[in-house]
Image (cartoon, rainbow, N blue to C red; front, side, top):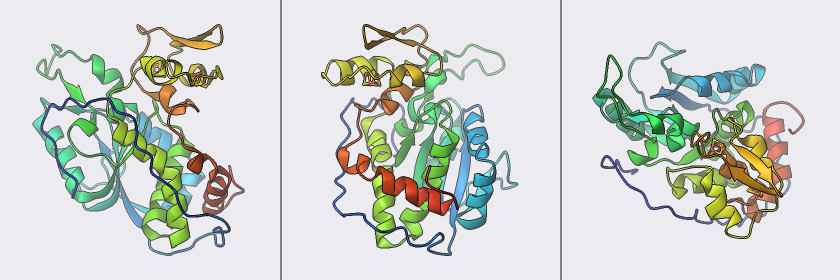
Length: 291
Ligand code: SF4
Ligand code: SF4
């Protein structure tokens, strides 16, 4: 049973653990819709801007496909008239938690108790992001001064960074959660392969910064100068200097996207080698060619 945590919790930085994908995953895409039972999904809105929910909605007809075939949306204060956190298979949690707001702290703990899988959706839930800079002192709640990523208060199963995460990545997590909970053994294994890096990211901790590139990629001799980190940064805090990223820390909003997108950060080959099968499976699930 996932545990609640004391507040605040200082977490040591650690490398993500490797989750071995042992099964050979060939020829598993046989049907478009393998099982009938939908999973239940909720959107839990903490101290976020609703941009992550908008990104989910930016799947357009893909969202309808998910709601038609794979998931019932049982909780989302922006969209659904349900006032209290219900039991659900997957909770997509957006925003960090103001620990001076008792209702917010109770809601995130309630979410952990009610959800089988908790997803930290977006940079605020995952790492605090822009709310890391909150200092309180503003009318009409000047005492609201400390905001923590949800992983400092509850156990998180999947971390999906981004400010916001891309529509496709949210869609993929929903489809893969469905396959993990309702699919065949082979589909469960493939879904686990997809989710493994994001589960490893959840284990890695709740602090993020452009300096992760320095400590965990460049200083490890891993950077190959591809520039993905600079292309990813939502505030253009990264420039490539002599083929290596240089971070303007005064611009960095601590979203964690650069490290998460860096191809030398944490993906292992067991997962990368299944990329084609995974994209084909998602494409089949969405009624498209793979993308
Ligand atoms: S994404 Fe990673 S490998 Fe590519 S330039 Fe940035 S730090 Fe280097
Ligand atoms: S450098 Fe940019 S992408 Fe990296 S954590 Fe800072 S704001 Fe996010």
